[in-house]
Length: 423
Length: 122
Figure 1 (cartoon, chains in turn purple, cyan):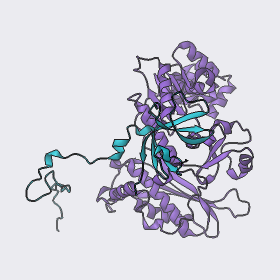
Figure 2 (cartoon, one colour):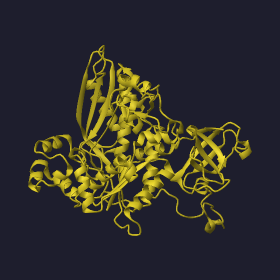
Figure 3 (cartoon, each protein chain N blue to C red):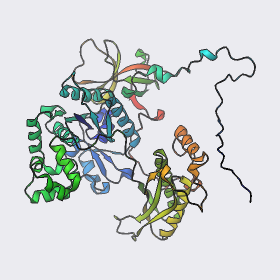
Figure 4 (cartoon, rainbow over the protein chains, first blue to last red):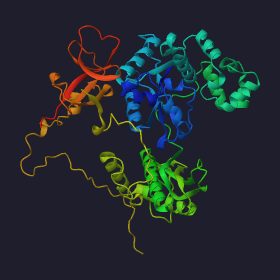
């Protein structure tokens, strides 16, 4: 049996834990650079005028009118709180698959001394007691059913109190009949539409289709979901994350930039971030993409956007090599006279370090020899991000840096930003 | 033609000092009694996933020996007993009180128990 534990409105509730004045009130969290709403608690979701993923400037008035408190995203805080939740869960089972920042699959197969329902309540209660974060728990024989059970745990709250177990055939069928097929984990909008066309609306109707139909129309991925819904485990339990296939970062500038030098510095900074991720997972990138664009939402500005992908001379994770490639790439697409809003970088063709083939005509890669990069990372880990950096990142004020106007304090990681209590 | 390397494997030099006394004369008599230094984090925090730090503003809590700028360690995993210092929420505001004999009433929500008070003595 597998439990899916998932935090309710995670980002918003992380903020509320430290702000009792906001308990029971609408709270939303904005994306990087305060671009759009990325998370809302249930009180905010209940206000119909607040659509998710809308640019904030379009809905700021509605937010203020409805007394919604908004926060810039504080990923340092959310990451640390997430870590606490995952640590607590690991005391419940030796097998925990961290699926995302706010959800995890927990293998609860061996639980015999207690009913699974009480075990689920124990997890939920302990996480709430230790961290103040509310969670929902769904327990079922397969991952897809656990996802569904989790959804049910949150829907009929008065009845289920945040925990729902699918442990009988009757409960499984009831759950499947209740669930709209488009809400099933792994079935996208496109497939749901096609299923609707042939008269399949609920997850139950989907499981009644013949396996050949599913295989033909939804490939083997669809068959796995189909089997999982029938209670046959078909998606493996992963305790180790898969290395990333592409690593990228792109953030809007705090203000519009024209000057190539400034954009260069931002670009080099993003490269430093992503190459560190590469080194942490001991892999190298084969391709580098750089893109640049102006503000699509502005009617007054001339618009321009371009993107370039280069094959690296040799797959690498060397910050300095990547920065110099990115500089060349940016030079190729930059055009003066525009007010740019965003630059982004993306590394792909990611392979494990030991698979990298050397190039006879180039010097051996730096990560292979010497200790520059490992020392570089060690210093930054010990003394904080960007203690040492490439000269191309620059030392002047980072005008391009994100505006995080309404970011809450980093209560759990910064001694200078502790939760303050007035006596 | 000059051959730079004959393909013979060379051993990497161990850059770490071997496990011997750092004194050149007498070996230290303490060698076999070495223990790690005291780590306050380890001593004061029994449950790090449930522990939060809070800084106090103001001198109103001096009767509890809590002064301005003191840092409280809050361990949410502990169940308070009568007279323990606790952080509670009343009307959406944090308050420090002594845990009463009777259970807390519904307007008063327990946030966590205060396990230590850190006070800068200077």
